[in-house]
Structures are given as structure tokens and as C-alpha cells.
Amino acid sequence: MSDNVNNYTAAGLPLDGVWLSKSYMDDSYEFSLNTKAYPSIKAFKDTLKSQGKHLLLSVNEGLASNNTRKYYNNAVDQNALIKSTAYPDVEGGKLTQKRKNIGKTVFLDWFAPASKDIFADGLNDLHKLVPYDGICLDLNEVAGECNGECPVQQTSGFLDDPALVNYTWYFSYKDQENLSTYNLPFVPGPQFNLDNQTLSLNATHNNSLT
Image (cartoon, rainbow, N blue to C red; front, side):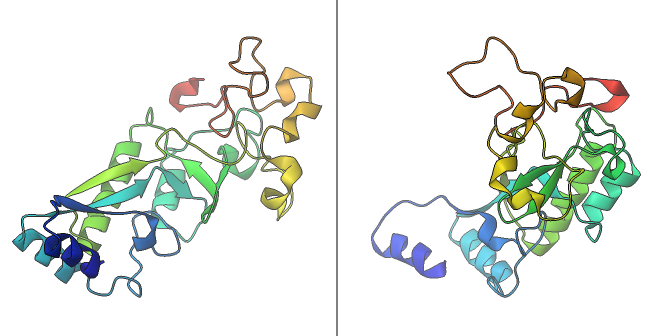
């Protein structure tokens, strides 16, 4: 990383800032730092600052569905996650997606009062690890690998079954009450519904908003 910055300087190329994507994260977890890969990140930041350059981080909007993670537990305890309409009685009713490197993923419900404080807490914790100058909210459109949501009622390993991702698993259902989405008649393109690899159209938010 330092070599890349030095090469820009040596070549006389303008460089206002350095962006770090998920490589800085510890095992792709939100608000974390891989100290093995970036053991001197604060010294690197100080060098950038002395040169009038900035350090910017890519931050995931989704939270790992993992009860060892502080932010997930806070969101569960404070009822701050987007809920599943299809599976309200499974895994606390939270809507589950899948993301590469993270696995099962949940999302803060920005209609819930506690969400902004949970996310701000994460950003403050991250800033203590990496004194960044700015962030890029990556995948803020609630992207995932299942359409609408992943079928959380199934056993371990379902997220890796090709039949359960990419607009396939729910097409066997015709009853609207069993769907995790709405099959709308006016979707763009010949194949994809509006929830293709994103949030269910009938997800439940705070105060029962859908």
C-alpha cells in the first residue's frame, strides 16, 4: 500500500486519497480491522496526513448474522433489524440474506430508532482502529445472493445450494402467503423480479411498515 502511494509520488501523479475495500476487514466482518494484513495502519494514516492525503474506507451496510458480534446482538436486543414477512417465527423473524465472504447477513431497519446509534457506534469503533477521513457505504441497496430473502427455515448449508439462490427457490410457490416476495406483472426485463438479489418487497419494518 505504501509502495503504491510512493509510486504515484515518484511518477508525479496527483493523489488526493487512498481507498481501502474489504481487505482491511477482519474476516470481512463489519467495523473490524485485519491487524495481520495492516499492522501499521495508523502510521500509514499519519504519513498520508503529512502529505495532505486522505484515507477512506469501504463499509458494509449489512451485519453478519453472528451472535458473537456486538452490533448484531445490539440490533437484535433493540429490535432494529428488518423482519421477514415470510418467516416471522424463524430465527427471531429477522430477514436473512447471503453475501460472499460474510455468509448469513441481516440489515438494520432505518425506521427503527436504535439503528442510527448502532451504526454510529460501529463507525466510532472503526475510527479507533483506523483513523479514517471518510467512508463509502458499500452495497447500501441491501444486495445479497438470494432473491428477497434466503429460506432461513432450512438446515445448515442451504446457503450454498445453487437451487436456493438466483431467482429459483421460491418459484415453486404460488400462494402469496408462502412467498418472500411479490411476483409483480410489470417487472423490467424478461426474467428478473424487482427483488432480484436484493430486499424482499414485503419485508417488514418498524411499526409493521412493509
